[in-house]
Amino acid sequence: MKVVWEKVSFTYPGNRQVMGDGFSLTIADGETVLLLGPSGSGKSTLALCLCGLVPHAIAGEMSGTVRIDGIDTRLTEPAELAKTVGMVFQDPEAQAVMSSVEDEVAFGLENTGVPSEEMEGRIAEALRSTGLSAHRSSQVDNLSGGQKQRLALASVLAMKPAVLVLDEPTSNLDPAGTGEVFEVLRELKSSGRHTIVLIEHKLDELMEIVDRVAVIDRNGELVCSGSPGTVFFDWAEELERLGVWVPKAVEIARKLSRSGIPIDDRPVTIEQLAETLRRGVLSKPAGDMERTITALCSPSAGKSVPEPQPILLDIRPTSSPSLRSGWLQPLDLQVRKGEFWALAGENGAGKTTLARHLIGLLPVRPRVMYIDGRDCKEYSAQELAHRIGYVFQNPEHQFVTERVSDEIAFGMKSLGMSKNEVVLTVERLLSRFGLSAYADSHPFHLSHGQKRRLSVAVMLAVGQELLILDEPTFGQDRRHTAELMEMLKELQSAGRTIMMITHDMTLVAEYAEYAAVMSRGAILYSGPVDRLFSDPQLLARGGLKRPPAVELSRRLADLIPPECAKTAITMEQRTSRRPGSPGMSPAGGERH
Picture 1: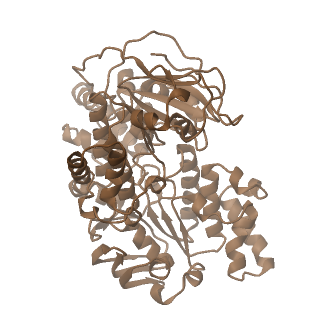
Picture 2: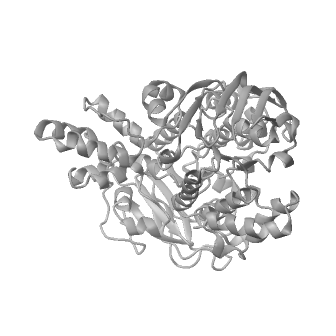
Picture 3: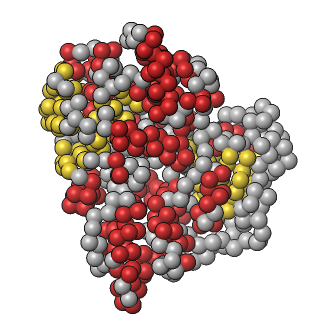
């Protein structure tokens, strides 16, 4: 079905307006369009217009017109639109309403009056197309994150919508779960039965199914629209200015071009780039190939090796850290002061649970976790708050005030900081995180990306020694992600210890020195990041995948020297190995 936005704008409560000058775009029947734009530009609002939640269910004022095959969404109730438009949101658990898989898929059918004799076939087909047939009788709570998101998609597909709208459908998923959802999307695309609107920042695996990319700016105005190759290469400088995500293959290809190496094609996937390099400069002798290898490897030089620091966090494998038996396995992890760690693993591996034990939100047994040589059980809640800062996975879970500026000031006031210091710090953080214009807004009225930036600003206001961030870049555009991560590197340089929980393997490769991989409550590996990416079996056990640039180095392994695989193209490690005692930890990682 044809989709049309015509001069659409929307004003939320609190006078926050998106698409102020009116957004217009037409999507042809059967087309798959990727919608890109900076955080807070209105992408999700545009998606909500298609299913009728804007303006029928979400408070605010809408202008302009949205039509689905000629149907005006302003004049049609969401329940009626659900027969034509199916929407999958970021959080699969936010969509689930029933306890069993079968009942969840049947829910929408029952509420729209589908005859019972027809329901059976629809349920079976929806589960088959999403690979969930074997889980028909399963409880929703027992599914993995990827399975829950596939269930959300199955519930939508059972309604047989002509238009599918997916708003960051993999944002909460580990790499394995993301792959599961993308595989379903590939099958849906090949069926030719749907018009698909995608909002997504994990682009590398999506490019093969995208017909067109539409980019909007911070004001919600359409910047450009065209094929992936056209948009990502012809509009590269504008996309960089806007701070939107682009495929890693495009970043690498442009890096090579800036190094004077001709890239004849417009590769938007790692597979395409590898093939372009194979039949191009890497197949040529001497000079061209040597220049290409030099550009690809980008070796880091002149970095000093810092002195080893004392251990800040020491988790000992004496017993389960949890008072609830079986929640976490005995763990063994040591983190030194001033290090940058990534805590990775599949959904439900125990990463967030471990973090909550550390900050005292969950109880811990004595003689298991030590902060700066002192048993965590001996710290009061206020003492832990002074030592450890924590950014929640869901930003809304940590908001306690009704104004953005008050939210940043709250922790500082609680610790007795002077009024002048509080005011200056609030102003500085509002400016640094692009939130000055929202100082008087309610935190819940911000976009998701803005909420995430606020949650990080709140933590940084106090200045604890150990900073734990649960998916810190979730919902962020490219520019804000880079700014946040560089800020964390600056804090590390100033002596802070950073631990980020993340599914983003590119982020791990670019910023972390060390990684701990968890699975089913246990640590499978702790050690240097480069060793993690050289072990495909370990990655698979942890539900992880190689970052795109590391995958490219693997595909070109017969042409590129081994040292290139370690520097991983543009994702060179930004630190040197710290000296320490050699040997492998029981989890299989290198102790340091």
